[in-house]
Amino acid sequence: MFNSLTLTIESIGSVVVRRIESAGRLGTFLAQIVSRLWGHKFPLGETIKQLHFVGARTVPLILISGLFTGMVIALQFYDTLIRFGSVELLGAAVAMSLIRELGPVMAALMVIARVGSATCAEIGIMRNEQQFDALDCMAIDSYHYIMLPRLIAALIAVPLLTALFDVFGIGGGYIVGVLIHGVSEGAYLTGMADTIVWNDVLMGLIKSTLFGGVILWISLAKGFYLHIEQKNAGAEGVSQATTNAVVLSAVLMLFVDYIVSSLMI
Amino acid sequence: MTTTSPIITVKNLNSHYGERQILKNVNFCVQQGEIRVIMGGSGSGKSTLLNHLLALLVPTSGSINIDDVDVVNADAKTLSNLRQKMGVAFQGGALFSSMTVGENIKLPLKHHTQLDENTIDIMARLKLELMNLAGFEDLMPAELSGGMLKRAGLARAVIMDPKLLFFDEPSAGLDPVTSVELDELILKLRDAMNMTIVVVTHELESAFKIADKITVLFDGEIALTGTVDEIKNSDDIRIQNLINRRSRNEKINAEQYIKRLTTGQG
Image (cartoon, rainbow over all chains, first blue to last red; front, side, top):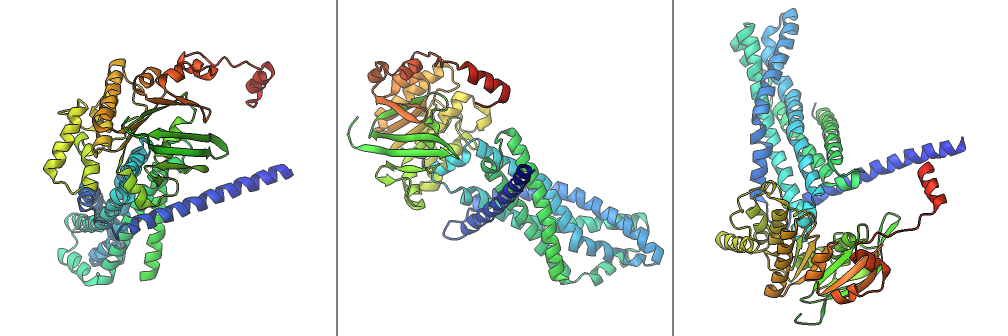
């Protein structure tokens, strides 16, 4: 009885210690990347390459998901508003929910699915194939050469992708509200223009920038520390690290979402 | 060998992975211009020793001095300067899969020199010619065979004309012809550029062909450091087992064997 109690406490303690260690590693990792902003030549070429990967190549996914999200929320709002005879508020409702909340969150989820998972797997495989050891041996700083461009690319690309998501979402709402259900075009557009204020746009911008940072930070770190955090560093380790990166960045993204919303509302 | 001053000095090196001791009081010197082969069976600690020499691992105790730099206690800048004088060819090449072979090879030059693009291109082609890889610069690493990957990794390792070259398992997984070609390349590099070369391998034929001296490791300890003849004539039974490819023939303790099978312990 006493032995099993000791073992239980030991295993709980060991899990807690591992979590604290992991959080410490994540913090140190981010600090290392940020410190490369000073005293180093800005890695412009690599950043542009990563902007293409994080930004340009995610555009089709963002356009399609933005369009359908806008269509769905327009349909839901139309169904609700028509019961209260306030269908002219459709444009405002669609735009407000997209710009303040759904746009940043949905675009970030798309970025996690396409960029976060791929980045974690790529970095994990680089770790497995001794590519980080090779960089160290060539006296090339991996935080500066590999990590910083990816993080900066995400900070720039994710807000732009979110803006595209919003525009296509509003377009999707227009298709459902105006073209399919016959809501007045003037009411849809004017209601939206009258309701949305700078603070709403700012909230979306801050959220999407932070989400971009969180996604790449977690994805890069989980791949980079694959050899420390995964018992099996092979294919299974890469798969597990990628799953962890996707789950943790999604949860952390929603936590940041709540914090920013509570500070700005 | 042109000089006798040691370029690598390892003293009382001890290393652990967790509780397990991997290297036990390792001591040796490598002279400038020498080809030193570090040999040993699987799990003997040779890769760990290489990682310590490359400053990728921190030892539990002991010192490593390379080209008058205390590798264990060096700051980042000193280590970076030292590493620019060193080249490392990894077992699998460790080429960046998102870059072409040419881009991989040019990477150190782009980072550490102010040379213009044309000069860098010419230098990269020179090294590719040396490795019999001319015309392959636009291919991706995934399109190369195992031997080509190793040679491309070697081209990247020597692109800065390093003073010191480390080569991890040059012959592992290669056919005999490619393996011999790589051995000849190693000898050519030493003769042409007076490089000091440290090769980690368990391939006997290759070791005997290229080595000036061989350091044999067993269970993390140095069994012997000597010339090829000294190794061949050693009366250490473990070395004789290794070079004559004899099994260790460990006597089985019946009681322990049964315990291992039934309980997984012992």
